[in-house]
Image (cartoon, rainbow, N blue to C red; front, side, top):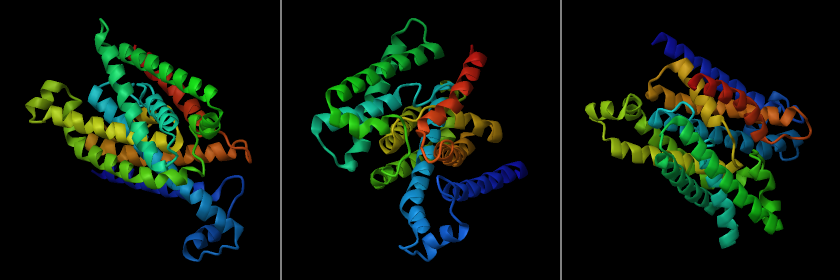
Amino acid sequence: MGSLRLNFIICILAFTIAIFVHLNFGAKSIKFIDIFNAFWDYDSDNFDQVIIRNMRFPRLITAICVGAALSVSGALMQGATRNPLADPGLLALMSGASFGVIVGSNLFSINSFAWLPLFASGGAILTSVLVLIIATAAPSRSVVGLLLAGAAVSALCKAIVIVINLLNEESFATFRVWLSGAITNNAANTLPWCLPWIILGLLVAVSSAKGLTALSLGYETAKGLGVNVKWLGNKIFFSVIVLTASAVALVGPLGFVGLVVPHITRLIFGQDYEKIIPFSALIGAIFMLLVDLLSRIILAPTELATGIITSLIGGPIFIILVRRLL
């Protein structure tokens, strides 16, 4: 219990520091007093306070939401499938959500941000069903087969998206940066429509945590412990789709966040999903704040796409996990 409390305090301190560092540093460093005054004594003539209030704070909230959503989504998938490589990106949910946004926006010519999470959810549901159909049809139902099915469906979705953007220059111009996976100031426009869905998805995930711990031990074990496995599976599926789709609608496809963070969380807090789910959200938020900061300062004043940083971090970890698994 003492170790849990200490780890919790360390995570909260790290989260607080990450928030301050994220607001403070960038192409332009800003004094603490201006950060404070941006919220408590706002002066619209103070350029530093304007940067904090109108640019960095919306990015901060977006990074926290996306990090928490993708991390919890990955933790849910890994627990439900008992597959340590399960991740919204590797199993084509992200490319499916991107596919849904691009196809939906082009077919219906709807520019309202309110529709983005719904289009993304539709695409994610479609690809998840396709991946499951392909994986279960394979002679050997293995982790590798599931990953290959995810890779195939993901490649198909990306190819269709490329063709659509080649045929529609306006679509390419609109979604070019978004498709690279980037936390930008424009995400603030979509955030009010995605935030309620993210909160709902996180609440459903937390309510599923106890049953997920039992389910991670095996289907029969969970049933023996009195878990309604079918209802639990529906809740987990809903939460994964909503969280992934909302994150993609906000910033585009960000790979490996849902793979890396749950593994870090399990190393610190063990195998109990009542701890893994909430702490994955917290550690995911910290991770994404630091990643977004790196994307802004590495080549400042030029920004790197956030997805490049997550791939550089997550790629080697994925290789290590595959080697251990195989």
